[in-house]
Amino acid sequence: MAMVLDTEVYQKILESMYSALVIVDFEGKIIFLNKTAERILEVSKDEIYGRYLADTLYCSRLLKVLENGEEYINEKVRIDGQRYVLSSGSPIKNDNIIVGAFAVFHDYDELQERLRAVESAYGELNAIIESSYDGIWISDGKGVTLRVNKTYEEFSGIKAGELVGRSLYDLVKEGYYSDSAALHVLKKKEPVTLVHEIKTGKKAMVTANPVFDSDGNIWRVITNVRDITLLTSLQEQLEQVKSLSKKYELELQELRRKSFDKNIICNSRSMESTLELAVRVARVDSTVLILGESGVGKGLIAKLIHKNSKRADKPFININCGAIPENLLESELFGYEKGSFTGASKEGKPGIFELAQKGTLFLDEIGELPMHLQVKLLQAVQEQQIYRVGGTKSIDLDVRILAATNKDLVEMMEKREFRKDLYYRLNVVSISIPSLRKRKEDIPLLINHFMEKFCKKFRIKKQISPQVVDTLIAYDWPGNVRELENVIERIVVLSSDDTITLNDLPVNIRGQQEQAMDGYVINIPRGTSLKGALEQVERLLIKENLIKHGSTRRAAIMLDINQSTVVRKAQKYNKEAKAKNELSPKGSVNIF
Image (cartoon, rainbow, N blue to C red):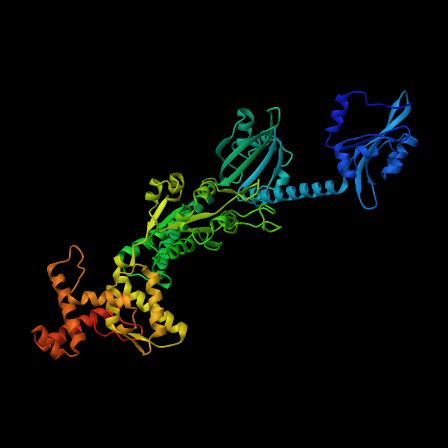
């Protein structure tokens, strides 16, 4: 007598079962197994349908069910040499005659893994409840106490044994509590917060929240209990901590501002304002667009922002969009999947965005980015999400983006060379770095800094003449700080004497100064008093004549003033120069 599954509906039901199912007829031939069984047994139904169970699967336990007609429940059954399932089996009878048998089973290792996960989750939940700062009281939908944590025991002075299993109604009647938030929840079916007094005389703020079952009935009530006295004390302490934290934050900002000269040398107010803005914006994750001519130090500002941000201990990745060939730039930025193009790595490769995860990505020369990549960059900035080249799976990002350019992006937008939407996304905060020719008061400090740097690097001692300092200050510096650094390195390396003179300077710099020697050019800031302007002219004339004639006597003759006046004025201006730290690191500049 053969058994046949005669309806498609039954078969679909069996196929959709979460449990694995195998059915055999009275001869032990396999007539059905669902997809879960195929996966666990690692077989295909097409391979084994109609074949004897004994010839295909190691399931001797099910064969015994056919023989003796006895079912078994939740037995650990071996299905091959190493693997086991947790199985239940039963005969299929028709008029008390065995016409087949079936087994329902689960992968034993999977069950063990799930059991461990449940135990772990229970352990975590228990740890959370017991380590909670608040007292926690759990009751059921009828008001019976199920559990209280240790914090509640310590706060109330009442042991869990006095409460667990008892009705909240009885506990209120017996004077344990003046009121019960949980009982109000059972009546109102909504969260309740109140203040009540417990048996020990302490007052507590209590918040009770209902947990509903699938039918909308209250299944549990979770009550949080907090000592108001302790809370008030902690609130006062918190305010003190906040006040101290704000004080320390301001002090830290001041210390950071004072430490600018370790990497960024400046004396001008315009540059100090730029640095202060950079430190201020570093505290938030806003996108920043850094603007400035080539060589002004846009990369240093980007590093300063990263250093002072909450991401300071995470990666800082710098990429120059104009230094990478256009055909490689997309894969460098976004990475690529294996086999996405000829020559691609077999394993694929993460892009710059992924390497900067949790940190800061600095996109230098953003104006060089091709239009088709601006679209992908916009998505990355806007959605914090990218796709690798050749990939279909999105990658979530947690990256702060800084961008920089020496181009006029507004003009590029008008020419449709730069996307407006990307510009506004990048330009949340903009920082403009002044060119070196607009902050000439920084040049003496930068000269000293680079002199020290290269003298130390090359292990030589050099000093720089005042004429050279003046010439460097007068130069326009189209290449800004980078050009100045390169010039100092060159004259330190190439000068043959211990003192660097005008002859050691590049011709273009020296030539500009020589053209200006026919007259004097003095930059007098707006708002300078007449007395202040006259002092600047006087200082320049005395200095030039002392340099040119080499003695106070001859300088006095040329200026048509007394020698004592020249000596007194020179001493005054030298003293002021020293106070402003305008001297060479090796002490060679002694004329203002």
